[in-house]
Image: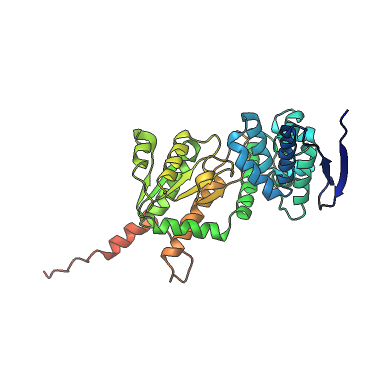
Amino acid sequence: MMQYNFLVKRVPQARDPPAFALQLRIPSSLPTRICRMTISKDKRRSAIPMNYEGIVNLITAEYPRLSQGYQQIARFLTQNPNVIALESINAIALKCDVHPSSLVRFAQNLGYSGFKELQLVFQSRLATAAPGFRERISALETELSKNVSHGNLGFLKDLVVRDIASLQGLLEGVTEDMLASAAKLLIGAQTIYIAGQLRSEPVASLLRYLLTMLHRKVILLDPSGGLAQEMALTMGNRDVLVAIAFRHYAKEVVSITEGAAGTDTPIIAITDSQLSPLAKNADVLFTVPEDEYTFSRSLAAPMCLVQCIATSAAARLQPNRESAPHIPTVTEIAKDEKARLPRPIATRR
């Protein structure tokens, strides 16, 4: 009977659980296929990220290949990191509307030994993390519950609580570089195309209005005539597309965004997550936090964001203005035009 010698060595690494290296003295008669399988598994284990940013990048890369159930888990993990860090697997599964075993299999599918190892990375993030979306909602509900909690005013309270939490998340998630890059693209574009349908349509219309008031050439890819995708075919690399879509993403907006990427048209994407189909092709990506499990999802944060983007563009157009950037209204423009008209010459009688 053939005998093999095994030597197990502990390898010191700065992570838990400790890693071990297995050295094998394998005779040449052992099938090489078994060796390759073992090495492949070891490589996958060593490649898994042990920090939060790495996990998000890994999930983003794997997301298109995941099943629908795993995609649901992926969205919940990336949008509620503090929940993942602080709550039990049973509580997380209940909020995610899946069985706890699905969370275990999801973690193993990414290369982790189980959900606990994945959860440890989310727990290490808490040392420097800001409060999550759900934590803000919980704190605000506690604060406002003393005033209103029932009836129609209770509905208003719930909406206000979620709006405030979403706006706070927006303030923390948007950077100076993101706004500056978006403004630069908008000012330098020959034509600005805007795509936003379904729930995103009011956001797209507001941005069209604001940029038009700044005398930019703007085309709203409105599907009412059935020609939105055909109009989008005129986009080129001297233009810019602002694509706006949230779950469940409007198919036509996704298709227009993919077409823009094919023509090298710069894309500014406003969506709910970096797992969104709009995110992969975006030159500038704005993610607006929202509670996807709430029926009435508010537009307060997206509306605030597009106002800020337009104001950033106005600031570039008005570099010598001493006061804050100004976007004129239709009424102001009408008044200015009236003031510039020549006064009638008085005639003698």
